[in-house]
Length: 68
Image (cartoon, rainbow, N blue to C red; front, side, top):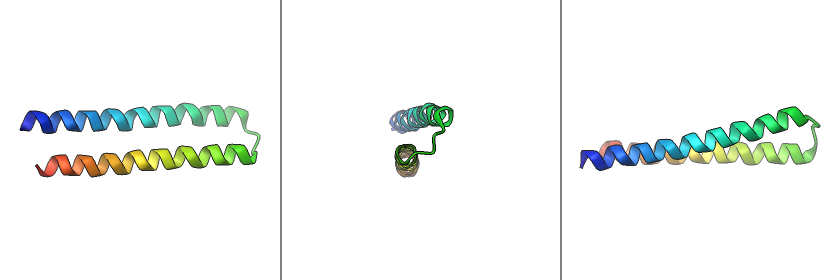
């Protein structure tokens, strides 16, 4: 049982880490373009929502795994 909790945690951590790395890469592209366009604002919003969703999911699943 302990092994499955540990494995679940690592899968969750991997998912959150991947989202953060992808978000960072996309934010760097926006930073270098820096046109201030509406399209950039929409991209920024989507990136922030993705990071927020990944963190919330990670915290929820991590908390569920820790309670087992």
